[in-house]
Image (cartoon, rainbow, N blue to C red; front, side, top):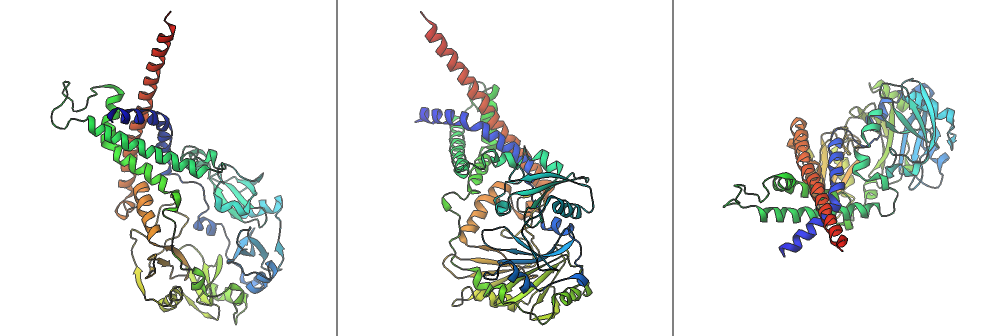
Length: 498
């Protein structure tokens, strides 16, 4: 039995230690440099304040121009190349832009229009057109698929950004700084095996490599403990049978850092949601919370007056988003990620920083009308609701406080996180998704509030433990290579005998 463990560990270890080292090195880089994305804060920073004097046709007119037979899932008033446009989202297709002054639908964006949009977004910095790109190393996120190909424009600013713009609307979708372009070759691009991102079984490769890595690491831990003499040391005086060399490094580092390495490999596998183990089983439908389509909105005020009202309320509006709550249309106007006002379309004169809790509770109750719901006003970040730094893979999600948590008594024990500033649903978590929070976020990136609040402690710890895990993997490569050389030399001597 012991010999079989050694053989399994030896051959699997040789095959898996190389990708393990790469994962660990790239993981250290990802602590500081995340995969490129356009944050909501960056998006708003690149937009001008809406001009009430030259704005706008009504949102219902924009919806009719874009698609008279289908209500959009999302509707926004924003600026493209400094001019007001409505942006409409429909399932499975690229966004549609409608000129908010003329009502014309934008079907194609030229090179000159892309340059104008990029230059405006770059606050007037010189812009250089690179070309039309379907996909490159920095634009592999599946969330961008509907908008491909992109106009790519280089901005001559301090960050030396590359901007990726929709070829249909001209809207900036992604910005990539020079620093991100350099470091991501060693960071997320390497960590997520994006070199094979377009291979149909990309996810399966990562899942089964991680599974095999977990098995090898567990076997190594078992063997390491079996070889360690806790009471009587070996003749060398050491509790390890290896008194020197890479075997000793491998053994000692494995005992110290092995459990953490197992946790990282396993949680990396869980990030891929293998075999749908942590997929949601909730049957609650968010459409019941909305209880209506955007097509049905109406307001006693024209759009120009609404924009003027928001500006007079002291909000330098850059973007407006519409949403339905319990059959009623609301709009939320943003000046920044922390500055917003919400209006009920039926009563636009009353600007609210937060919606009444009763309104949100009534909408949530419609998702499960026959059972009581439990409410919690979350005023501080906790294990299931937390903010991350801009370099994190979750940094594009704004996490404001307070937040309303609604617990349902359904079979999946669903939670709903609702933003009281806009009334929008932030996320829906059932017990399986919350389990995934433990199996991935906690084990893999240490998303634990005491550590997130102390990056000066979290980051050095993760670097130190990563270096320890690198010692395990790198020494495993050397040991495996040495054994292969010994076996090869032995085979040559055997066959060279007359």
